[in-house]
Image (cartoon, rainbow, N blue to C red; front, side, top):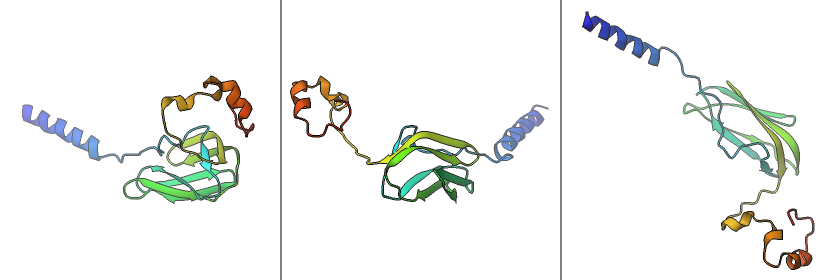
Length: 142
């Protein structure tokens, strides 16, 4: 009797593991978020993972590009180059829907350095003199 119970439990566990297909939600790396800036004047890559063979649609403004996840679940699309602009919504549809709001297209600058890079100029030594001598008043955060 004990052996029959063990076989039954093992069979039930095995059936649970292989008997149902696994569906994975469409996912993108954390670099995609609300308030992001996409580089202007280049094809815009959007990538992520999904269930292998799953159709994925990526929409920005009036453009929608579709693809299918490969056998490893990876997918990649390229949106057409755009000029600077924004307050767009990027929508990614698969088994689920991802929506990123307040998306802008413009210049993307990557900066690195010490933690003081996050400080506004008004907190720097000699801030008033530096602000007065600044050549580009269009820069924010002064």
